[in-house]
Every structure is written in structure tokens, then in C-alpha cells.
Amino acid sequence: MPIEIKMPALSPTMEEGTLAKWLVKEGDSVSSGDLMAEIETDKATMEFEAVDEGVISQILVAEGTDNVKVGTVIALLTQEGEAASPPASQPASPAKSAPAVPDAAPPASAPVAVAPAPVAPPPAPVASGDRIKASPLARRLAAEKSIDLATVAGTGPNGRIIKADIDSANPGAAPMATPVAVAPAVAAPAPAPADPVRPAAPVAWDDTIPHAIEKLSNMRKTIARRLTEAKSTIPHIYLTVDVRLDALLKLRGELNKALEPRGVKLSVNDLLIKALGVALIQVPKCNVTFLGDQLVSYTRADIAVAVSIPGGLITPIIKDAAGKSVSTIATEMKDLAQRAKDGKLQPAEYQGGTASISNMGMFGIKAFDAVINPPQGMILAVGAGEQRPYVIDGALGIATVMSVTGSFDHRAIDGADGAQLMQAIKALVENPLGLLA
Image (cartoon, rainbow, N blue to C red; front, side, top):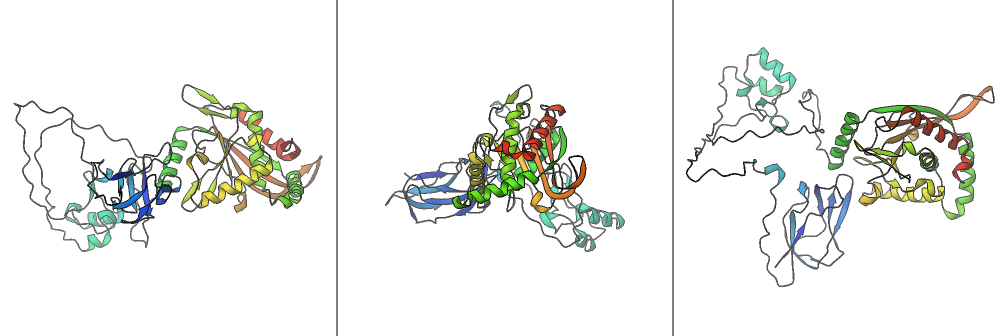
């Protein structure tokens, strides 16, 4: 009997994914450990390995297919000489799933209304519910020309009515008929919850401007959903301090010279990761997660570091940042960042963390407010180090200064505690030998 190869759950929270690419084809022989496909999750593109050996007799889900539910049979594997048979029934595609109906069937004696076969209607414009999809410009022109939008077939994206459709429309045309099917009365389904990725109402945009429409990747959908969740549900409080960098930069130069034979090079960000980790241990009231009626306090500082990758952002984690040497942090961060850009991170390497750090200084950004990465309680936004007028020992001088802003979940972290953390970070950066102790 053929072995069913199913869509794997490549992370604890994965419910569906995109079958990005098949690395095998029908008729290929595979052994345990052979790479079979690339699966795009909400955070990375990961390789899927064969568990059994045999011949790929049938590929059931084409590469590039989105929203493939975990557990869906995607291919069949047979032994040599074994004939392939159809796969067991599998869950319907989410895009084509049948509408839900009540579980209880009517009594045997109750008559059941049969819907007459509808007559095939002429093409009609695509609508969302009862609302016809049309651009704002098309709606205005239709109103000026007394054209009923129900009589116009849209030729824009997803059947949207655009200006050209109005220009060619007949003002006197009758509305397009839509067949009405008679069906048994059923309880009205509860309204579906709003999708945080999509706006509640269509966004007005001018489709007369030359444009391109790009389908969102799973990663971009997840980023949109999580950022919307964070800004909608977490009351952010922002605290900013200016930090003098001169001592840190001097120490970094000395350490890099000493570490050169080992092939290790420290970045300012590596030292800031260490500083945030140590500061969170010093101020444990900021190393927390808010759970509604509970507060989780962590005894270890795992720092998620924002890394820009093609198509989005990912946050690989330096675990126990306070307990590791800066050379270890630099080595791990270099490896994690490279594998993040290659889409090779494992879920355990980017899921979790107790706090985050996002550094935009390399882009010349002076200061910014970062959005908290739930369920974490804070994130540190790092700006560029630049020479500024600065009071040194009571006299005005020039110093290399950096602005850092902490975003805190005000449900769990009071302003005074957040301020204490920012002062701890400032003290560690301005007296960096404490990072080596």
C-alpha cells in the first residue's frame, strides 16, 4: 500500500504553509534523509526530508500551492513494483471548502425543499457580499453618467470595475440578473472574526496610476497580523536615553585586536545584546510576559535580534545573553544572521525570547520607536552613534552619542521600572568593562 506523504508541521504553531518547491519528481527514488521539498512557513523556507524509502509515484499538490493545511497528503510513496492507489480522503482546500451546515438532520417525515437548478447567468461583476467592487474613480464617473454599477462587468484585478469599464458601459443597460436558489431555512452563521491583515473596509486607491499587485507571502501576512495585534492590544510606553559610546568603541577595538587570531570580530550590536541581557537580569521586573491575569517573570534573558531578510523580518534568538561571553554572542549572531537570510533557521532558533533588540543605526536612523514583539514585554530600539555636543566633566565637548528607546508593555511594566532598565543599559555601555565581568 502506498505511503502517504503529508504536509509537515515545521513549527509548533504552524497550521498551514506554502509548498514552495518540489526537489523530486514522479518516478524518482528517495531514501530516508533525502530532501524532497521546500516548505514556506510564516517565518522561513525550510527543507522537508524523506522518512521512508521508495519511489515517488504521485505528486498530489503542485509546487507554489498556498495555504496547504498541515496533514494534507501531498504525495504518494510506493515500494519497488507496488502500484499506486488513490490517497485517502483529505481535508478540502480552504479556498474551496463547502459552507458549514447544522449537524442535526431533519426528521425523516419532514419534507425537504429541493433547490431548482439555476439558469446559467450572464457574467456579473465580482462583489464582496452584496457590495460591488469598484474603484473610487469608477464610482464617481458612474454616478455622473447615471450608470448602474450592477450592469457593468469589471476587468480590473479580481473583477474590480475601473474607469475603462465605465467609459465603455451603456447607461441604459438593465442590471444583470442573478439566479435565486430556494433552499431550506438554516440558522444564520455567526459573523466571521475580522482578519487583522485585511482592512475592514476596502482601501481606496487610484487604479488609473500604473501599478503592480503583489501577492503577500506567508511571512508578510504573519508580520502584518502580529504588528496589528501588538499595536491594538498592547499599551506601549516609550522611554529614551542618550548614551555616550566612546568607551564602548575603544573597548571594542581592543577586543577585536585580541580576538583577531581566533577569527572573531565584535560589532557594536553584539555588545548591546550583551548589555541588554545583563540589564534584564539586573532589573528582572522588565524581563516578563503579561498573560491577562498572570505575569511570567523569567530568570534568564533570551534576546531576540531583528534581522532584515528578503521579504520581511525575522528575530533569531541569543539564549542566555547575560551568561555568554561577547565573543560567543558574536559567533552565534553571525551564524544565525546568515542562516536567517538563507531561510535555514529552525523554529526553536527564532521562536520565544524574553525581549528584543532592533538596531537601525547602520541606516543612519537617529532614533525610533519599535513595536513590541508579543508575548515579550519590551524591545530596545537602537539609533545611530554620531558625534554631538556633550557635557563632559562639567564642560561642553564633543562625544559619540547614541539614542536608544525602550518600548514597554505598560500592562506589566511600570514606567519607573522601565526607566531603571534604561539607566542600567546606559551604565553598562558607558562603563563597558562590566560586560566582561
